[in-house]
Amino acid sequence: MYISICEKIAGVLREYTGREDVLLVDGGEHADLASTVAFAMAKEKRMAPVQIAREITDAISERLLKELNVRTEAAGPYINFIFEGNYCAEVLKAAIKPGYGNLPPKNVRVVLEHTSANPNGPLHVGHIRNTIIGDTLARCFRKAGYPLEVEYYVNDMGRQIAIVAWGIDRQHADVFAEGKGDHLIADVYIEANKHLTADPSLTAEIDALMQKVEEGDEAVIRRFKGPVKRCLDGFKETLAGLHAHHDRFVYESDFVRNGDTSKILSRIGHMPEAVHEETLALDLANYGFEKKYILRRSDGTSVYAARDIAFHIWKGHNFDRVIDVLGADHKLIGRQLQATMDLLGEIVPEIVFFEFVSLPEGSMSTRRGTFISADELIEEAGRRAMEEVTSRRPELDEETRLSIAKGVAAAAIRYDIVKTIPEKSTVFDWKDALDFEKQSGPYIQYAHARACSILEKAGDFPPCYDLEGAGEVALAKHIARFPKVIDQVVTELKPHLLAIYARELADIFGSFYHAEPVLKAQGDVRNRRLTLVEATRNTLKEALETLGIDALRAM
RNA sequence: GGACCUGUGGCUUAGCCUGGAUAUAGCGUCGGGCUUCUAACCCGAAUGUCGGGGGUUCGAAUCCCCCCAGGUCCGCCA
Image (cartoon, rainbow, N blue to C red; front, side, top):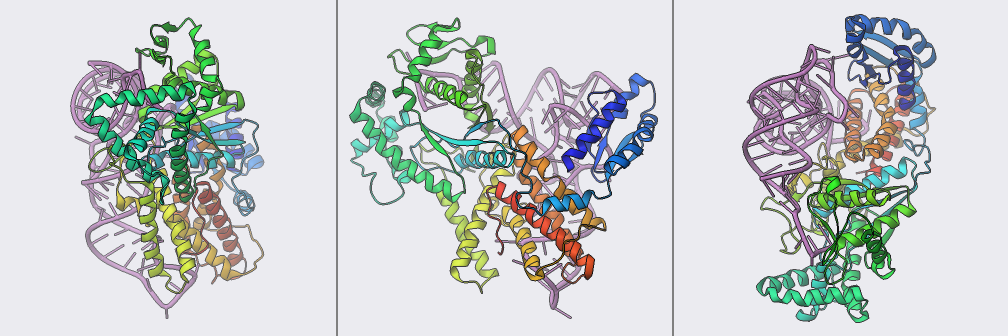
């Protein structure tokens, strides 16, 4: 509704002004939509913007009112559009339907890769920024009608995992002991790194292991596989706790075993940009990279980058749009990968980069053991949420309270992370992560629960779509924007837009809730407000679920 | 040394790509509001050289240049 009206207004303006760009902006408190095109036309027409705005308004206002129920007003140099008539009614009718915000199905197959942390220790609060950005994007793509596959790329043959395998033997560690596998692996990895730092000559043993794996040595491959599986099982548990899901786990080693990596190395070897020394590298100077992009070591083994190219070629052959979520430390290599894919004439991946999460005392590192694991965070959030639920709703049985607390905990964590733009580096703060107040996930859940409560008490009511009053209209107009937000998230790859939108909707509902009695109102007033509450509830539910947050009916 | 990201009230933060109407919110502070639909809430107030300096423009938080500060990267690691 909102999207189509905006497009139609743009069309009329384009037709009248003859300009391609009609400079539509958000009207803020003045209007639903505004155009600043009069400023831009002032110079060429040698006229004052105020006058131009008036002329345009005079010329198109009648048509817009008749065809679209849009009131057009010139406010100084601005042209304001106010949506009237049955706009709000149409919005309400759409918004009370299940699946509100779903966009028409697309036939563009999307593959989205996120998290892909190395299996050498548990996911920590830095990794889950990747997870939450990625999973939120994935949910938005599905809502926007795209066929989507979400993948986790498992680095199961890198140096890190060789160090783990080596450490297990040397420490006689039992990584199949009781407990969460990823944490057991971390203990081994941290210890092994201490030995390697103390005696750098030991790295030769790691190199030997990596070489054997690439040669296909079955015994060594088995030594790698066990801990990788143990670690991934731990990851899956953590990811489930965050409501994040992957459709497929893709193993790096597969691209060596099936020959894709050597195929691509030989293909690259024949390119004019190839640099053959002891190593095989690519010269990406034309793309602005000073250093060579090394793909094969002098001992003949492939580096990570080569396997990554093979992986991305495979993705490009099976999907139309390839998206990766990567940490800022991968910026250089990510752009080298994009350049290489471009050079090869393959689909160039779109990469969403996010900056680091650090601790007040410094950067996080699995190797050094300086990190807060996602499991710790989830557990602590769950504990705090349970305290909160128990003090607020002592009458509920323990099972119900636990279930609410779990939903609240995941909401607080996911929202705290997704609300900030990815370009901003952040310092992890327990207080912010466990915040259940305004600008938090639980705050939005609470708005939803209140709406549910009203509707439950109301019982059946005949829908009424004729809203009145600024409070009701403001709420409906914000509801109207939801589909546009979903569209924006997938075109701009900015999941935080949805987080902001949901919070604003909860805010507006909060004001409405306090200002306009619903159940106590009579007749049509009661019915139209109930209809509006139902539309809000449904929009909040769809928004929350797209954020990967439980839309709790009570809390 | 080079490259990329960030810098917005005491703290956290949106807006920047695509310039436009009094710069968005939260925390904290101050003042109000629960016999009324869940107070994880709402209403009001105070708090801003949008890091600094130049430039472009009718108009700059937004675009360009320089500088400063913080983060990240520059490996035959991943």
